[in-house]
Length: 169
Image 1 (spheres, rainbow, N blue to C red):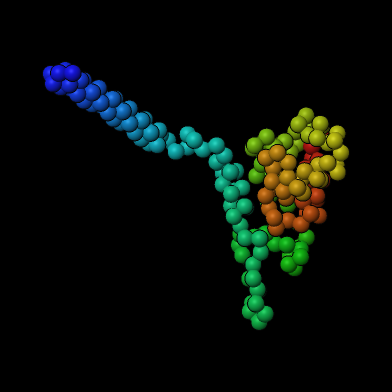
Image 2: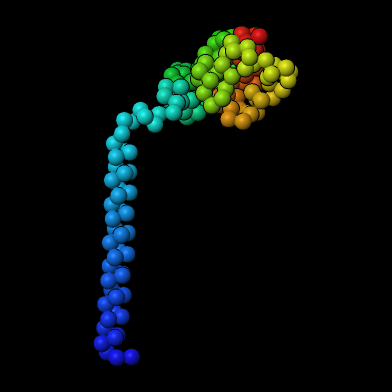
């Protein structure tokens, strides 16, 4: 192989290499511009749940309880609902629904049947209250156990379920 042919081969390699690097750089810049344009879009455009989703997140992040030391004044955290076991008033099914279940069952978020929607509730009610109780207590599809509120007792969850079923018959 001649020296002239070797130089031509090397030049062809360098030219091809620079072309590939140039194309990759152009693609990276294009992806960057597209990502920047999407990120600068209206933040609400990608808000899938809005206030309902924020309420669910707040409920999941809320403390399950608080610590009280003997001799100190009892204080209840503002983010946790009063509980009958902690000396608070017994909540009705409607109050429990308003505090926890309404986050999804008022608007139908994540496929939850809306309270009062007889057509959506009919096939569920037909399966029987025991099946619905099991789903409410242990979770079902996208619904977490206890509706995402671990602070609720089983009896409170069932009370809220009975309220929703009663409103949806």
